[in-house]
Image (tube, rainbow, N blue to C red; front, side, top):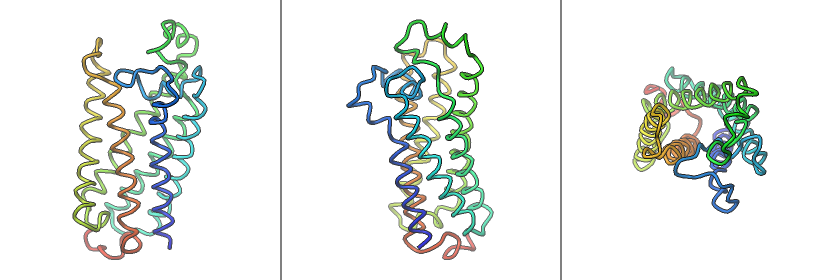
Length: 223
């Protein structure tokens, strides 16, 4: 039963973490090809509360699932995976409470607004980076014990695909941020691919173990 509850938490968490898709209908004006995803939840955006609340719900749901998973696992790699998931939840929660000041792809005076409170912008960057780093750590830990997480061949293929997308998209995002004129690198697409990889990974980590009981029981020797 606990594995099914955990699966439900992670599936719903993956859905709320995909709230950026709603912008297709809300039309915030943030360029999906070049704009940061975090711009959707910026303090000055009319729908910012919606996206920040969705991220907070994601953190609570994923954090609860992480605690449940950590309590029921025995192997060091699965423990690292669940621990990283908890770290991702904590970073995401803080990230949702310290949003971007404004959307630079929309407001031409955004740099001026940021200069009035540079600490908030810096903290947002730190928490966003921490969320990505812990997601990568957790996903790689689970990937190293894929048979314990994904019980079928197609699930393992999806897990490898999701982690690969997350890794490549993260490198892509870092490159786009490092380059001064990064329009040709499509930063917005990179970030959205990154978030998609995380969402798919959350679903697989939730659904996989639920198929055959608590994580660590069936494949304990592999973890």
